[in-house]
Length: 141
Image (cartoon, rainbow, N blue to C red; front, side, top):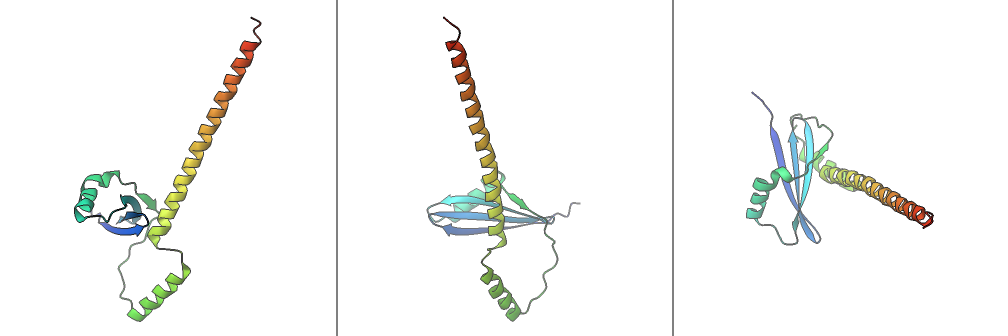
């Protein structure tokens, strides 16, 4: 029997002008995250249920490095407050935000490569066209 537990979390946030749904899932030591733009109006529960039930397969999840899963230890509330205060001063962002930023950078580099390739192909086609025109001019007719 496969003992593979999947834990998911959905966070809705408003980044003007759009609402965004951030899906996080943990399974077999992997941490994955995906983001969907919901639009400018506040999302309804029925719309979110429809998103999860019908479009779950089409969500692009970005895989983070493996995460060690170990049982949660009870942390003293004062220590927890100190840790939260300390982590909020850094301003780096949550794990989800960092992962989404990595995903954006990766997509940006892929887009740049494709754009560079298209530009080179266009320049090459233009060069060939000029060469053919030049050869036609020199045919002597």
